[in-house]
View (cartoon, rainbow, N blue to C red):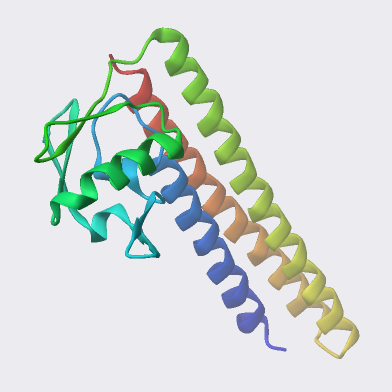
Length: 185
C-alpha cells in the first residue's frame, strides 16, 4: 500500500467526522429558529415514514418562529403528533392552516447545558480523529513490515499526525463558533 493511499483514506474518514460534527452542531438550537430543527422528524404519510420537509413547506418567518405549512390539510394532526413525539422541547400550535413552533429565549442555565452538549459532541469528534490516526499509523507499521522503507513509513506517520492536528483545529473552530452563538444573548 502506498503512503498516499493510507493518508487519503484517513483524510476521507476525517472529513466524515467533521461533516458529522457540523450536522450535530446544526441540530443544537441556540434560541434561534431554524429549519434544521425538524431534521430527523418523520411523519406517517400514507403508511410510509416521511420527513416533515417532504410533506410541508418549512419556513422561518422571524428569528423566534418556525412555520410549517402542510401541502395537504389532513397532514396537520400527524405533523403535530410527530413533533410532540420527537420531544424537541417545543409545543406546536396550529390554526387549521399551518403549524407554528415558537422558540423561547434560552435561559442562562439552558445555554450552559447546550455548551456541555456541544463540548461532548466536539470531544467525540476528537476521539474519532485520534482513532483514525491510530489506524493510519498501524497501516504504516504494517506496510513497513511488508517492505515499505522505514523513513517513508515514519514520514507517513508524521503526516498522519499533521492531518489529525489540522482536523483537530477545525473541531476547535467549529466548537468555538457554536459556543459563541449559544452564549450570545
